[in-house]
Image 1 (cartoon, rainbow, N blue to C red):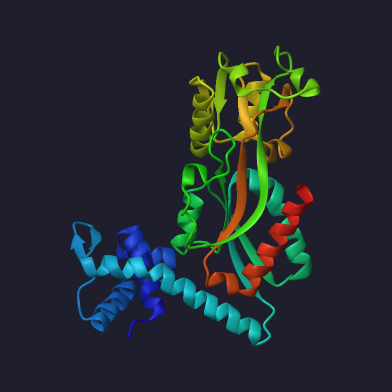
Image 2: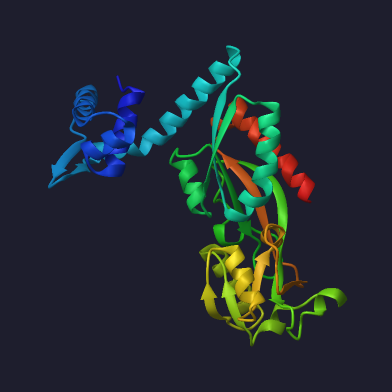
Length: 311
């Protein structure tokens, strides 16, 4: 019989490459890790690990077991949390992963409300952009992932960069639709457009650009190419305040999600509406088993309420 504790140890060994490193990660000794791996190999009746130099390498059977371990362990977590709630324990744990502009806008309001309603629920937060945040969810390393995907260039509704079926195996909780806006220096010739109307992205064709995260960068190039030009990207940074600072210093223009601008004071820069509109869909994702866990469900509800306040 395969035991959950053995699967957790196997995942740690696969991730770290050695018994000693896995022991440090799990808070136990190297001999204890070795003993649990021997017990697991005895249970399944085949070797799972092969020593290669100073590291441990998975056998084909080991790779198969690690591949299934995330789903098995998330199912067990869901069962444990639900049973604890039914038994009357007012406790829970939620591991949340969010992209930066979501962390600074949606997450604080949602978690403050969650703590007020359920003070026994503990929430941890880690930042990652999609698709990495979605990978962490599928790998069993978080319970909720805040993610986004862009509409196709040209404004037609669609899944954009991710593809139609990218989240079919997950529970998708729509939160809000976030519109992209242009950001130009205050003294730029087009800065006054913000007061009088919208700006076509083609109007910025000859400008130097500051680009954001890799996914946003790809969307920028796609939108610009649909307007007939390729942007000259002089600077690229994942940090939204850095993007705003570079624009404010007159070093170029940018296109940012409205949600990002909500969380940054754009000194020296002015936001201008883009037409035709380019939007991204912001959602909260979880696994089907985890969606039934009370603490996860309550967190999803509070994220939806926080999004409704922004809209």
